[in-house]
Length: 342
Image 1: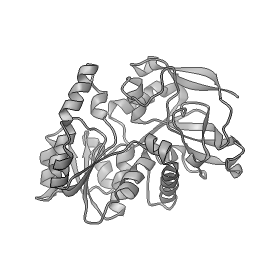
Image 2 (image 1 turned 180 degrees about the horizontal axis):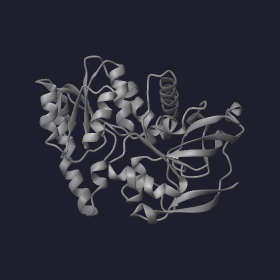
Image 3 (image 1 turned 135 degrees about the horizontal axis):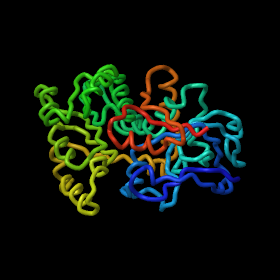
Image 4 (image 1 turned 90 degrees about the vertical axis):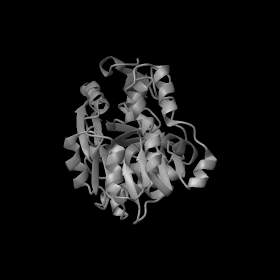
């Protein structure tokens, strides 16, 4: 089957990085489905791939993208036949920036007529947030958690999930205009790293206490800072490295990024009863598909029951893909950014 997709063809500026090309979909495997895409979502990993900093990305030219909303038009002989003709939210291992994509039947969940931009927020971001806060190490009522990038796609959902479980939430943002949003979502305290040292601000909010959880997609220099804030039993959950994405010195920036995080000594973690957890949902999807399936379905249930309200960062038309990428990369966006392809 012939279709079209936005191929990542070169590193650098978004305006020159993507090109619409025709390509042939491969033959379906027994448990796969074809989704006719209505809209696809953007994730920070896409920005990292465009900048040549994402090791998991396939070699260029390639089609990136982890999620889409659309209609199932064909299924493999061992796939769920009832999916044909249904509108679904689909999680994919690349291939999302296209008019059609192929994914496994366990990575799609039927949806109704909900807004595409809200549904898109539930895939990569929603599944990641649910896996961290509800599955991997559930948040408890007496916990105090720090959410970095709190106004972003994962951050806005983490705030809601943590509050739903009764935790105290400290939300970290980088712009004054984002403070109102995270407060509205339930954050108990807000720190703005552009107005002062965020460690001092967090310590003030803790009022002598310690953090139980840090949800950190930044890494780099923030790693040691967050570890200093964790108390006994505290969990550092690393799920990104956005501090590296703005660097322009190639290998020197990468080495500096790693150096800032220092050496991890397991015996020291044991003696201090602190924990470091790394999260990469691609690895979970590859090696534990049933976990991905569970998290995807549960986060959609929370949304449909009204317990989660995904935040929209804007839906762009396909010819504005570069603008959508630039907005996500700028750090000025809030919530999920999507691209309408149909």
